Image (cartoon, rainbow, N blue to C red; front, side, top):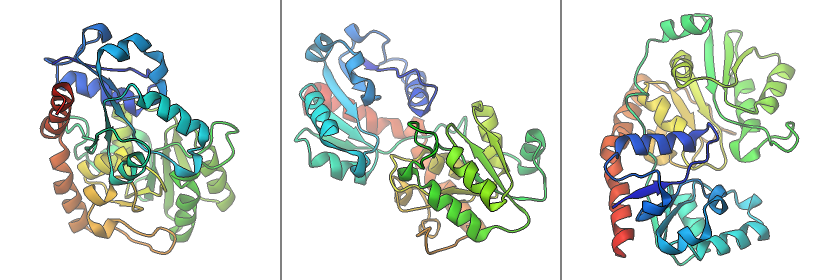
Length: 307
């Protein structure tokens, strides 16, 4: 069995997913669409970049990471139905995406969560990380490393990511020692809110993985405030690095995190305990790519064999 994953080349999370899959499965991957048995469309927004004659000759698995119902209009549905004609099976990471996709296709759906790479995400000394980043040692640092602003105007909040909820939460728990650590692209909305509230922040827009590791390690708390998610990856990364994290009930949060760390962010405040952090670390280990990849391999074999 040979598998080809389409390559978005966007310097974002799907590029890393593809890279890690190729590095950890060298015996079954190929860089040639023509030579593959399974075409894995891991970046579905770029499905039309693949020649249509390739689809007709291959088994096709399509990953749907997440869908925002409020944005899924008739045009999105029509495009889904056109692509659906070429797809043999779908991969989704969580139950919320599975539920939505099951209503618009009769093709098989495999729910398999994301993995994490323990070679990248492992505990790191907080004080050394702060020193390397030039961050103060005595602050309570709250982290958020994802896009939060719509690209259409670079002003409006990307509501599915919950930047408004994040800012509300930070304003609610802030003290004189609070410092917000931001990463990722398009953080204009959160930066504007923090400035209005007089909350100090540091922003690293385009960081290397090595720098992002230090950013996680520097945090006293990482906050996932999203309304819709595929993962997010922060659930795995923060947990594997022993970083306290809280999340809304979204994406894979219920699978990865201790239930104490999943909160109604509009009504609750919670600071994870050492026990919570240890439990998150232990829970996330089953998603180690070397172990978890077997579920993906089983999916791909079943699609190839038509079972």
